[in-house]
Amino acid sequence: MIATGALSAKDWRKQADNICTQSRTLLSDDIKTVTTDATTGEPSAADFANFMVNTVKPNYQQVITSIKALPAPSALKAKIKKLLKALTKGTNGINANITAASAGKLFDPATKSAKSLGLKVCG
Image (cartoon, rainbow, N blue to C red; front, side, top):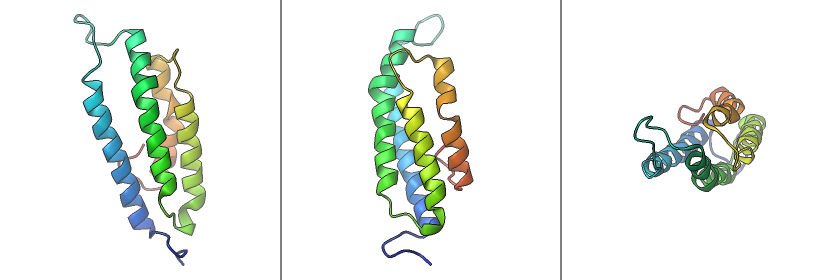
């Protein structure tokens, strides 16, 4: 049974994936503005950390807020709570000292949770 006002599991997944698609599109556009080294093609450590703190972190905070706002079906609530906890922990791990190596690992638990929810874009 679906709680009053709740989305179906299929519709919840579709809307959550739409949120993640929008997030990825914005980040893809924003990453193009980051200065990179002409030799390596990579941003400096400071530019990378700045991008993560000032662009990625607020973007992910918006994703979390948007997913929380979706009326979740009862059957998915526990898995959604786990996803949101993992996303929040990863997002909170973004700080001025973040490196490319450490950034990749921050969201591994969230990716696992997203996949277990059947999300195709998130994660």
